[in-house]
Amino acid sequence: MLGGDEFISSPPRKTVRFGGTLTEILLKYQKGETTDFELLKHQLSDPDIKDAQIINWLHEFRASVAYLTKELEQLVSILLKLPWLRRSREVVEEYLGFLGNLVSAQTVHLRPCLRMIVSQFTPPRVTIREDDVDISDSDDDDENLSENFDTCHRALQTVARYVPSTPQFLMPILVENFPFINKSERTLECYVHNLLRVTVYLPTLRRQILELIIEKLLKLDEEDEERKGNKVVSSTSERMAHPLAERLDILMTILFSYIKDVCHVDGKLDINNTKDLYRDLVSVFDKLILPTHASCHVQYFMFYICSFKLGLAEAFLDHLWKKLHDPNNPSVIRQTAGSYIGSFLARAKFIPVVTVKACLDLLVNWMHKYIDNQDTGANAYCDVALHGPFYSTCQAVFYTLIFRHKQLLDGNLRKGLSYLQSLNFERIVMCQLNPLKICIPSVVNLFAAITRKYQLVFCYTIIERNNRQFIPVVRSGTGGDLVQTCTNPLDSFFPFDPYILKRSKKTIDPFYQFWEELSAEDLENLKKPIKKGTSEDEDDDFLKGETPQNDSVVGLAPNSYESNAIQVSSTGSPLDCYMPYPQ
Image (cartoon, rainbow, N blue to C red; front, top):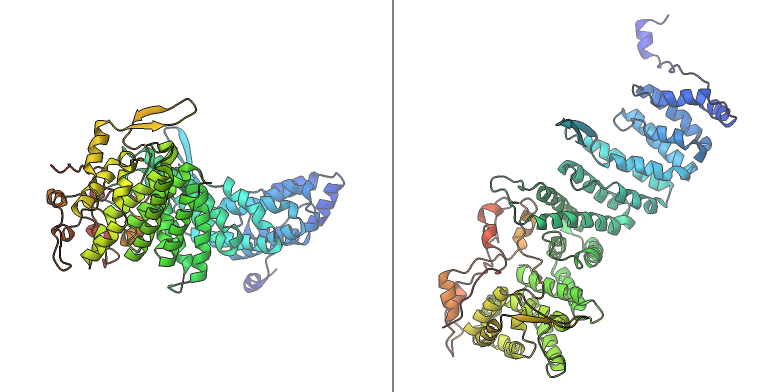
């Protein structure tokens, strides 16, 4: 008999088991003797299994992995269901060792091992009963959740270290396990966060993982778009009123944080990291965003990364320009690229006027060449199907001018006017293709008012003629020409319209050019043309009261965006602004 102290200091007795050693049991099973094997499975499946039992079994299994062939996949499945993750440190370490031994000796079990690890990327499920229906979702009260996720990533890294081909087998499993969008915010948040962590130690999967996440975000965003008629913004809290908008807000916040963390090392921008991530994001943008019509928020990942360095913004604009002017691209892609160029130039505060002018020169020169080639030929008439990219480019230029004309004229009015005159808007407006007939009326009206004020071109005669014709638009098709009335025949949109998701908008607002509705005084000022021979130093009433507020959020403290930013209802594109024609 051991004394009290001797008992405490002595090693624990080996747990009582039946059936001999593990090797003996497995050899018997190969010979057809299944009694001990069934007993083994029963013991491993015991919900009350103790840590000491798990450690002893795992120790034996690590020494016997050579026997765990495909024929024993049912036994391996039971081992992969062992409750190892929320056990003692000793259990965790032994289990990680077992996983490494297993996949290195028997790669046939690689997929089940990966599935087991990925299944832990979301919080454990709890069952809630509502109206006699079981609702399973995440348990938000697990205090060890972060530590458990760390352990899961250790397990995945262990497997990848032993099996170099792990990434190609892992990616389909990550896709299969992505939670449905109606799952809880916490479930989606944890899964996306863990996916992004995988990209840190398996960088070959980064582009595919980003593509997966952004594809899911787009589905949330389209759901959000369908609910535009309903209230999505709660005025009294940080939460979005609609559950899907709230989920999207949380996930966009995570994505923005990831982009910032990857691009910055010790608080400083790392150029190489940033360039690599930019290339991955542009690839995803081309594949998923450009073909998607009128998404509201997801595309802002490109806006955000471009804010880090002017070279990135210029590279993005150049990328869009190549999409726009390449005749081999589908017309719809070219038109969308035009929408992105105009919206980006108008809304990105980090783009300086010199870059705006360079882009305007490029776009306007292309428009004039297009008119040279088309304005006297057989296709010299207003047709969206024939000239869609041209009209999209016109709208991009008009939209940019609306937002940026003050900066283009700032400092030296005569020089600024000379530059705008050199763009020869009159030829564009007066050409047979009649872009004022196709572009969105609110853009046309503001462009007309601004260009009239600075005596660049008088658009109202054409606008009135178009209105008298009820804006019929000819669309060519296989069944003949179709004439219809439409106020947005391009089906165009402004991809960087105001960002309204409450949490994540705080990341965007400091870089964003807001728009205020025009006051009655502004409208009156727009009717007054500038006087000929205005001196460079003479104040101009309209310029002093310009509506795009260039400094609306500059220099604000990090927590003061919401209190100072303009309300959503007054920060949209000037889509609903009615501009009366001068009498």
